[in-house]
Length: 388
Image (cartoon, rainbow, N blue to C red; front, side):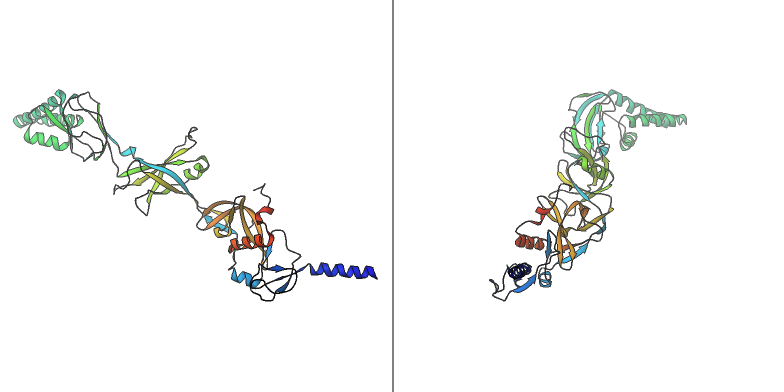
């Protein structure tokens, strides 16, 4: 008889251990016996523990779901396009550089452009050259014109054209040749004009110096189009090489950024710096970009369909990333996930979820806090992260 009484007491104790008392207004209150809420003084409500609850799982009532604004969404394939941010610097477009060199031997009588940074226009005088070769060619041209005027010989047309082309090869512009034809030439030195417009990068000649044929005089750079040279790390090289468009932002310049295309990706890897270089070509008609400026280059990779969830569903921690998976009515379980790229409000899920899994997107951090309050531990502590 005493054995039966003891067994009944044990069953009653076991049964009572499956019930706890909580407050509908303060669900964090959990007592082992009935009474009033220590916070709001309302009577506590008996709640039966769910024996089917798994480790890391959380069960909320309808009021908690409503007050916590718990909303869910599903894991599904999403069209993703990653934007890779690269560090870069503005440099001159080498394809638009013009090297001005001497076409004839002679002495520089006067140098009109003396310092780097000056802007010159096409047809502007650069230097005055005293050249026996050039003076002789001018005399030959003027003599052929005079002979044609006197003799009216049809063969002189060919000689005149040959003399004119020689002057062009020696560096004279068509307008200068026309002026020689109209006004003749007196003196020993003649001005040589700039073949292009641009900013002077280097001045290689000096006034009074004697130039040999091919001697460099100065170098011009056209900044209407510039390059932005960006650093690419090996893990991003394949994605960058597959992309063609990019956008650059430069501190203190256009708020909308600068759109351009990737015109070149260096295929050689620099073992010293452990980076490759990518080149972006940008229009600079307003001259907002100056060589040497620092820039951030966003390279938009080719879009592909990947399994993903809304980014708000992902909780990032020191040990990895987790989401709250809906496992039943008002039931949620913390699940470890391996994440990839992020784009347009979605995050790629490499592993940890399958297509159609429902996750919490609004209130995920609230569930995290609720779990830590009730269990006294972080939900991530129970996860095996060795395979992530």
